[in-house]
Length: 341
Image 1 (tube, rainbow, N blue to C red):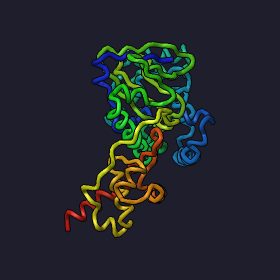
Image 2: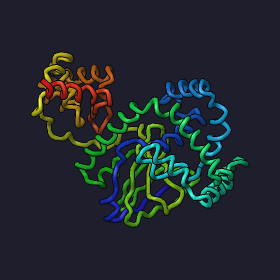
Image 3: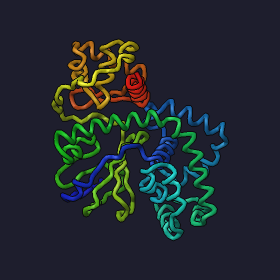
Image 4: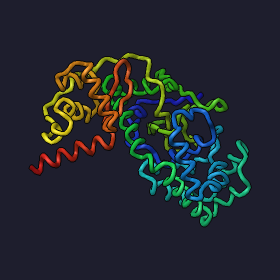
């Protein structure tokens, strides 16, 4: 169990990451390769990634270098997932490369005591060895993570829309209370289902916390082992919906009608539905915006989802629809065409 202690300043400084963290994606996707648990949720990714690793000649390096450094146990080195990676892959890899040698040696020592480190791991303290390692991380990211970035970002945007509604309904505490079945909010402590071998308290002490939704995380949240690092909670993006039934928000409006070109392509009602989803909309809100019945709105949402334009997430007793990157591109293109006309 992990107990995260919040003060008033921490609640004010807690925020939700706008994108998935690429180095946490690397770490947790490597965990996915080490287990059959939850394979159903990643069947296509697992099959395709295995094939691509073979084709790129990376299978042996992943098996002999990466997997031993990212075990699924209670610990792997913090320097492999630096806070700077929230700004992008390049920033994260540069931070790995810039890690102080004494810190690399210390964290590899912890890995050796907790999980058992490969005999060569201590050489990562050497700049040249770490440069080779960073190149391998980038190559693995290009094969296993980058091809799925659009899908991952669509899931993150959907999660942000759900959390934004919880924030509007109940403030930061409401957002924390609705994070998922793996967390329980009892002011001022967030009780988090953690690795069973770990029982710890994390005191934020005014630093706040960055919440990072993770596409590849299926079971339980992860945070840094070192409490002195910037507080981060990487939590499962795919989980059961909250049990609490939240009321529907006010009806969406169509003050900005969809572009005529979009209506000609999709039909007016479906174009209005896509436009309504731009900032997140429930099926009921789509129905009110388009002036159709709930069953018709549901059919329109299904058609848009099947076309890859929106994604849907259960939010209490409702289903919240948000745009995928493709759907957002369609809306932007239609808006640009209307502006040009």
